[in-house]
Length: 211
Image (cartoon, rainbow, N blue to C red; front, side, top):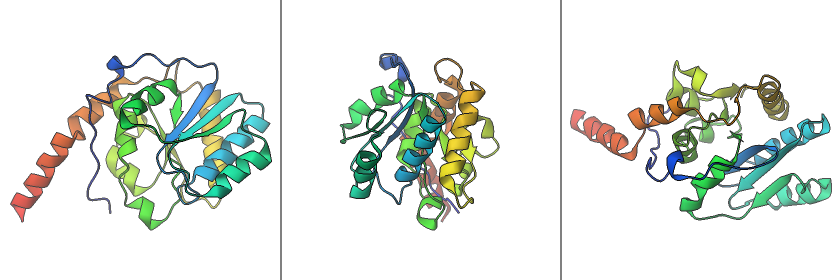
């Protein structure tokens, strides 16, 4: 059970303070630790499957690469023209990177460590008004509850997450589910009402008072 969620600085992660993103290709994005255990290689392979099917996209992942196997896979597969792994940047640079993308993805595998985590990046994407793709695990379903319209889920229990991620992105593209710029003001409103750091601190205070 997820009992505590992250918050977000809604002033820093404010799309009104950021230049509109400009790019030529549909851009999939992730930032944070880059590792096999976080599903980043699965995400690469899912996007690779879509490229082989004729979809024109870029995948940009920003952060510390934990597993050298990921870099080796990119080099050996000769996919660096569209698959980019970039070094970490300062927090103040992240909002612009989010604004530049079309679809943030959090490809966490289905095991306990991720099911009960509450990634800060989730709130950062939402504060920027970006609808994201996530596995239907407790750390996400507990946040959205009945508001499944605010998120794209893929099946996390499947033994082949690569296919699940690829098929869901394919459906998003084929159905133009993001519209023209993937900016959803209701996502920012959702976060401001529930998941600022101030609101999280108030929840913690109330919980302590109840003990």
